Image (cartoon, rainbow, N blue to C red):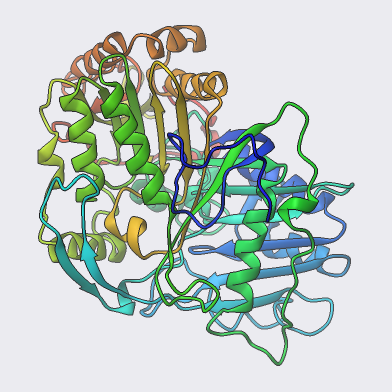
Length: 522
């Protein structure tokens, strides 16, 4: 596939070793939190006239994309499968894993039930055996090996025609699971996250904190790469159900998609383990390449550079070593990390085992306490309807996988499904996008900071332009929120220290949710 000669794929910060090249002429829109993201995806499902293709890792077929509509994912896809080609490729875990779609699909579900039904294939992920290295030789190589039980096809993508002459793709991290749906208010009593599915919603609100995450909507030639990934995975899925599904040919390729006028450069990035698909036997480490290249560029730029991270995990030793190298050169690092990722769950236990087996436990100590690094987390607060003047505090689960790097000469932002974990960077199937429009990146990071810091977008832009002030502001807000739980005070913003904060449990007994207005998160 031909790429515009205006793009130099060897220049900072594009990934040089990714399977897909950077492409010109794309339109990108950030969709912050599940309410916004899944409203757009639901609308796109209904507009499509030719095809709808999905890649799913964790998911529920009865997920409500727009809770007020009462239309589940399965209902919408079923209603469209009579008119358009609807296909999905679904991760099949090696062990029983909660919130995954079973193979075969439920009886009378419209999945793999002949012509005019949803055509679904399930895909098992391989393990990994290899050498864990640092591009900058900042730590000794480690030989690691993981069985297929540790593998995951973790991508979350939706691709379809736009109902006219164009195509659209969504790439992100929000699983189609109801407890992942949330609004920017992150109200811990928002029953829309649980009420439709569970008979005891208070119990599930206690167990599942509000959740922050992102999707990106793409138009332009880069959509062709997201589509090509789907076709590759669908046609090579390990459980093809060949008696009821057919192979697929890409309806359009990147060079057949007209560029968007005044569009931006976008690179579609992946992690694919070696020997997963015969079409790409060496695998794909494009996401890791982009991370390392962008961080190396920030280190070389030094003072005046800023790295902003949102991520669920923080134990890829290679990535953290490069973050340390950038901080040592004067780059300011602000990282919002999940307070206790997947604590007490199967997934949480598996992640801890991955960390133990890497022989590189608690990698965060490489940067913890560094003058140029702030490791923080997010929380939320809302009035307690049981007692006037009291508040309900909670962590906000950070499921976003985002990094923005600003230097005096360029900026790059990447986001999608990949965690800062050696699993995501080396052998889970992941998809991110990356783009380099500085003004757009500044505006979107400002939107995120406005939500988290509870300041105006204009104030956030001013902080981005002064990395020292930004680092001081984030730390100051976390310091101010350090001891608010004991006196029961409302916080200033939503930023807390990552390891020095102990959020109280959400004890919600006695609350009548039918009498509680949602959206009161502070």
